Amino acid sequence: GPGSEFSEEAIERLKETEKIIAELNETWEEKLRRTEAIRMEREALLAEMGVAMREDGGTLGVFSPKKTPHLVNLNEDPLMSECLLYYIKDGITRVGREDGERRQDIVLSGHFIKEEHCVFRSDSRGGSEAVVTLEPCEGADTYVNGKKVTEPSILRSGNRIIMGKSHVFRFNHPEQARQERERT
Image 1 (cartoon, rainbow, N blue to C red):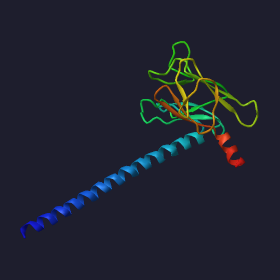
Image 2 (image 1 turned 120 degrees about the vertical axis):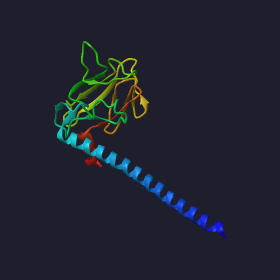
Image 3 (image 1 turned 45 degrees about the horizontal axis):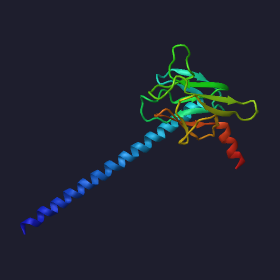
Protein backbone atom coordinates (compact mmCIF):
# COMPACT_ATOMS: atom_id res chain seq x y z
CA GLY A 1 0.00 0.00 0.00
CA PRO A 2 0.95 3.67 0.02
CA GLY A 3 2.53 3.44 3.48
CA SER A 4 5.26 0.99 2.54
CA GLU A 5 7.44 3.21 0.37
CA PHE A 6 7.45 5.86 3.10
CA SER A 7 8.85 3.44 5.68
CA GLU A 8 11.45 2.19 3.23
CA GLU A 9 12.59 5.73 2.63
CA ALA A 10 12.69 6.28 6.40
CA ILE A 11 14.81 3.16 6.83
CA GLU A 12 17.20 4.38 4.12
CA ARG A 13 17.50 7.75 5.84
CA LEU A 14 18.10 6.04 9.16
CA LYS A 15 20.85 3.89 7.67
CA GLU A 16 22.48 6.97 6.18
CA THR A 17 22.38 8.74 9.55
CA GLU A 18 23.86 5.74 11.33
CA LYS A 19 26.64 5.59 8.80
CA ILE A 20 27.45 9.27 9.29
CA ILE A 21 27.46 8.87 13.06
CA ALA A 22 29.74 5.86 12.83
CA GLU A 23 32.13 7.85 10.62
CA LEU A 24 32.10 10.77 13.04
CA ASN A 25 32.95 8.51 15.95
CA GLU A 26 35.72 6.90 13.96
CA THR A 27 37.32 10.22 13.03
CA TRP A 28 37.03 11.41 16.63
CA GLU A 29 38.92 8.38 17.91
CA GLU A 30 41.44 8.72 15.12
CA LYS A 31 41.96 12.34 16.03
CA LEU A 32 42.56 11.46 19.67
CA ARG A 33 45.05 8.79 18.73
CA ARG A 34 46.86 11.12 16.36
CA THR A 35 47.05 13.92 18.94
CA GLU A 36 48.53 11.51 21.47
CA ALA A 37 51.04 10.24 18.91
CA ILE A 38 52.10 13.77 17.99
CA ARG A 39 52.48 14.72 21.64
CA MET A 40 54.68 11.71 22.38
CA GLU A 41 56.74 12.36 19.28
CA ARG A 42 57.31 15.97 20.28
CA GLU A 43 58.20 14.90 23.80
CA ALA A 44 60.73 12.37 22.49
CA LEU A 45 62.25 14.90 20.11
CA LEU A 46 62.64 17.50 22.82
CA ALA A 47 64.23 14.95 25.13
CA GLU A 48 66.56 13.80 22.39
CA MET A 49 67.64 17.35 21.69
CA GLY A 50 68.20 17.88 25.38
CA VAL A 51 66.15 20.99 25.44
CA ALA A 52 63.81 21.87 28.26
CA MET A 53 61.14 24.17 26.87
CA ARG A 54 59.11 26.75 28.68
CA GLU A 55 55.47 27.25 27.81
CA ASP A 56 56.31 30.54 26.04
CA GLY A 57 58.75 28.72 23.78
CA GLY A 58 61.81 29.99 25.61
CA THR A 59 64.61 27.58 26.38
CA LEU A 60 65.38 26.65 29.96
CA GLY A 61 68.67 24.98 29.25
CA VAL A 62 70.49 22.27 27.41
CA PHE A 63 71.70 19.09 29.08
CA SER A 64 72.92 15.67 28.23
CA PRO A 65 69.40 14.48 27.49
CA LYS A 66 70.15 10.86 26.83
CA LYS A 67 71.06 10.45 30.49
CA THR A 68 69.39 13.21 32.46
CA PRO A 69 66.34 12.18 34.51
CA HIS A 70 63.35 14.42 33.83
CA LEU A 71 59.68 15.02 34.48
CA VAL A 72 57.23 15.03 31.60
CA ASN A 73 54.08 17.05 32.10
CA LEU A 74 50.98 14.92 31.52
CA ASN A 75 48.46 17.68 32.15
CA GLU A 76 45.62 17.98 29.70
CA ASP A 77 44.71 21.44 30.94
CA PRO A 78 46.99 23.85 29.09
CA LEU A 79 46.75 26.33 31.96
CA MET A 80 48.27 23.75 34.26
CA SER A 81 51.05 22.64 31.94
CA GLU A 82 53.61 25.30 32.73
CA CYS A 83 56.30 23.38 30.91
CA LEU A 84 56.45 20.12 28.94
CA LEU A 85 59.74 18.90 30.30
CA TYR A 86 61.60 19.55 33.53
CA TYR A 87 65.12 18.22 33.95
CA ILE A 88 66.28 16.87 37.30
CA LYS A 89 69.89 17.91 37.38
CA ASP A 90 72.62 16.69 39.73
CA GLY A 91 72.08 17.93 43.23
CA ILE A 92 68.87 19.58 44.33
CA THR A 93 65.89 20.65 42.25
CA ARG A 94 63.30 22.61 44.22
CA VAL A 95 59.63 22.65 43.36
CA GLY A 96 57.13 25.21 44.55
CA ARG A 97 55.13 28.34 43.94
CA GLU A 98 56.70 31.56 42.74
CA ASP A 99 58.23 33.14 45.81
CA GLY A 100 59.48 36.71 45.93
CA GLU A 101 62.74 35.97 47.70
CA ARG A 102 63.76 32.76 46.04
CA ARG A 103 63.00 31.38 42.65
CA GLN A 104 62.23 27.65 42.72
CA ASP A 105 63.81 25.50 40.02
CA ILE A 106 60.40 24.23 38.99
CA VAL A 107 57.65 26.78 39.48
CA LEU A 108 54.10 25.47 39.62
CA SER A 109 50.93 27.42 40.22
CA GLY A 110 47.68 26.43 41.84
CA HIS A 111 45.87 26.54 45.10
CA PHE A 112 47.35 23.32 46.47
CA ILE A 113 50.98 24.00 45.60
CA LYS A 114 53.02 25.21 48.58
CA GLU A 115 55.78 27.80 48.26
CA GLU A 116 58.17 24.99 49.04
CA HIS A 117 56.40 21.92 47.80
CA CYS A 118 59.02 19.24 47.37
CA VAL A 119 62.62 18.61 46.50
CA PHE A 120 64.18 16.24 44.00
CA ARG A 121 67.63 15.09 45.08
CA SER A 122 69.71 13.56 42.33
CA ASP A 123 72.87 11.83 43.43
CA SER A 124 75.16 10.28 40.86
CA ARG A 125 78.12 9.71 43.17
CA GLY A 126 77.49 6.00 42.91
CA GLY A 127 78.79 6.09 39.36
CA SER A 128 76.70 4.67 36.57
CA GLU A 129 73.20 5.78 37.35
CA ALA A 130 71.90 8.75 39.32
CA VAL A 131 69.57 7.93 42.19
CA VAL A 132 66.69 10.40 42.35
CA THR A 133 64.89 10.86 45.64
CA LEU A 134 61.66 12.79 46.06
CA GLU A 135 61.37 14.60 49.38
CA PRO A 136 57.99 16.20 50.13
CA CYS A 137 57.95 19.39 52.16
CA GLU A 138 55.75 19.70 55.20
CA GLY A 139 52.02 20.02 54.50
CA ALA A 140 52.45 19.56 50.75
CA ASP A 141 50.41 16.98 48.85
CA THR A 142 52.72 14.82 46.77
CA TYR A 143 51.80 11.41 45.38
CA VAL A 144 53.82 8.72 43.64
CA ASN A 145 51.74 6.20 41.69
CA GLY A 146 48.65 7.29 43.61
CA LYS A 147 50.19 6.88 47.08
CA LYS A 148 50.80 9.92 49.23
CA VAL A 149 54.49 10.42 49.96
CA THR A 150 55.34 11.55 53.48
CA GLU A 151 59.04 10.75 53.58
CA PRO A 152 61.90 10.71 51.06
CA SER A 153 61.28 8.03 48.46
CA ILE A 154 63.47 6.81 45.64
CA LEU A 155 61.90 7.22 42.21
CA ARG A 156 61.82 4.62 39.46
CA SER A 157 61.61 5.43 35.79
CA GLY A 158 57.98 5.53 34.73
CA ASN A 159 56.59 6.60 38.12
CA ARG A 160 53.61 8.94 37.98
CA ILE A 161 53.95 11.92 40.27
CA ILE A 162 51.11 14.18 41.32
CA MET A 163 51.76 17.45 43.08
CA GLY A 164 48.90 19.28 44.72
CA LYS A 165 45.58 18.36 43.18
CA SER A 166 46.21 18.89 39.52
CA HIS A 167 49.82 18.68 38.40
CA VAL A 168 50.57 15.27 36.93
CA PHE A 169 54.01 14.15 35.74
CA ARG A 170 55.77 11.06 34.57
CA PHE A 171 59.28 10.59 35.90
CA ASN A 172 61.66 9.40 33.19
CA HIS A 173 65.12 8.11 33.95
CA PRO A 174 66.65 7.15 30.57
CA GLU A 175 69.81 5.61 32.01
CA GLN A 176 67.89 3.52 34.51
CA ALA A 177 65.40 2.36 31.90
CA ARG A 178 68.24 1.44 29.55
CA GLN A 179 70.08 -0.57 32.22
CA GLU A 180 66.90 -2.40 33.12
CA ARG A 181 66.37 -3.31 29.48
CA GLU A 182 69.89 -4.67 29.32
CA ARG A 183 69.46 -6.67 32.51
CA THR A 184 66.34 -8.45 31.28
